[in-house]
Image 1: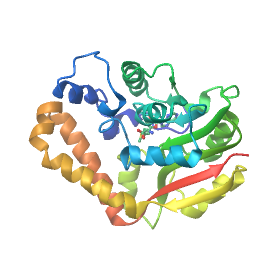
Image 2: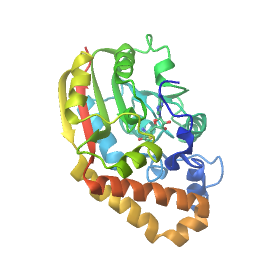
Image 3: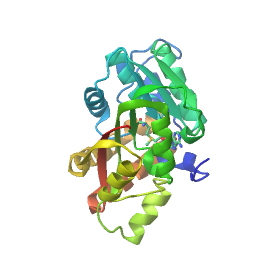
Length: 277
Ligand SMILES: C[S@@+](CC[C@H](N)C(=O)[O-])C[C@H]1O[C@@H](n2cnc3c(N)ncnc32)[C@H](O)[C@@H]1O
């Protein structure tokens, strides 16, 4: 595994990922019953702005029913399913953690999207991608887990047809983090690299990407991050009843940490759109 802490699975966001099944049970949806993709979108998007940003990625990449999109770090498959369901495209969705990948595959099958979304388990950097020939790539909050950006961008290039577009949302160093912020970003977020905006641009340029468009998303994400924390906490009794105290406390701690980090002004959110060589 490339530069990943052994304990990425202990990050609070990834605690008991089967908790999405608690939400389905709470809605009276029987185990293994067929699902609509939209039944899940409130719970299966592990990034900011939910499906709005996935729609934006589809628009910016020009995704259509004839597209084959690569999703690096697919989580429990929310973005991949939404892309497939809304555009008719094919998605190859790669996820490091076996439990997340298995959850993703089971939800995708229940949504009837198994013919469109291919879930692959394991480190994206270790896959043999040369034959994939994808026509676009998306990735939400995954680069932060991977220290070797040059290797990551080389691997993305290998998986894509020349001239394909990529859409990435992630973190950047906006200011000088305090020692407490560095501790949180390393221990609570398992962040392995935090480049500045200029360093992000240089990494893509050095990897041969063109038309590099970089947007500071911080001010757009801040209210989302605060709202996520506040609404989860406001529904404490309901959330403890559905998930149990352990899950509630773990997510509450994670959402609070993210709100503190973004509120501090030194952690930033970035969107990168670029064209592969
Ligand atoms: C914050 S989650 C986001 C998941 C998904 N992109 C979403 O927005 O719902 C980041 C995901 O990247 C995965 N990941 C981290 N490093 C990876 C790697 N080297 N290869 C594949 N997946 C990776 C993690 O296991 C985690 O599920």
